[in-house]
Image (cartoon, helix red, strand yellow):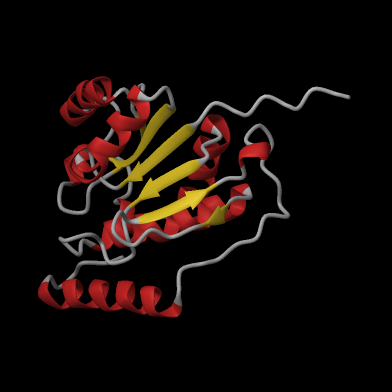
Length: 199
């Protein structure tokens, strides 16, 4: 009888719009998983790796046990100098963002992905809503499936037995039409309050 394969080490990836979202929205989850021996990592969509926010992020991730910063380097919508010469996250081509996220997902091979909910958390920021949608698209592209958790944003889970090889046959349950409609309404509400704001 052949020995059963050793289960993959637990792993978790957080995908957030801004530096500090990882601490404010999921710091306890990241720290608890890291303390229990899971590999944890965080992708941050905005701010350049050479900005002062990158240093703050590195310090926060060290405390949370979540490794080195993984920054996509897009500009924050309200602070163009956050990533000079780069487009704002809300103006970035979705296929480009998703491709970068898929690269991080495949590098980390998480069993769990945490991100913003489709409503943009309490703030309703469009980039947080879009970060949720892009993360879900990236998990789908990387071969994962979803198990939404409403109180903690969107959670995508990868099959434990396939943590070393993401497969395309995994069932996908996308966000509901209600959730997507809520995200669209949140974006429109913010756009109406801030003329010129684009997503």
